[in-house]
Image (cartoon, rainbow, N blue to C red; front, side, top):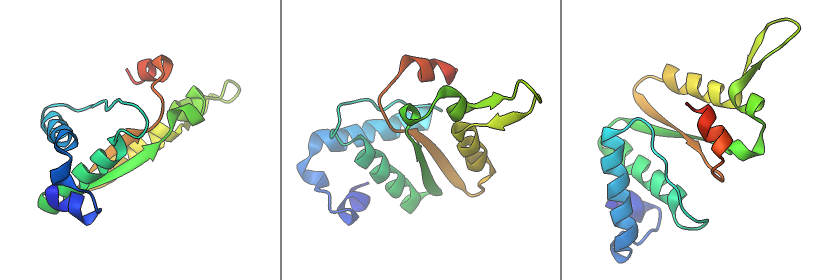
Length: 126
């Protein structure tokens, strides 16, 4: 992670709290399937996930990040919807990203829902 941070002009050694959070995210990544990184705007959440993915890609299999803002679209646009007239299902953005991530071989895909936390779309992930 240190090398990945320096390649992005980040001062890993001068930000021990942030570096510690990177290590915590790494440790959580190894034992969980879904992770929530929550904090105020500008706290370094995006930079931390980018740095961790770069570091893991350098020493392990490639890590790809797919991002979306769930608050920018409606729930049917996010997850998909059934047409009441024809009965046809239309995938939402999240379903498309999920399918794209599962089809990718020789890489780990992270789907990042980057935006304000909302109880409704969080509950819909269950």
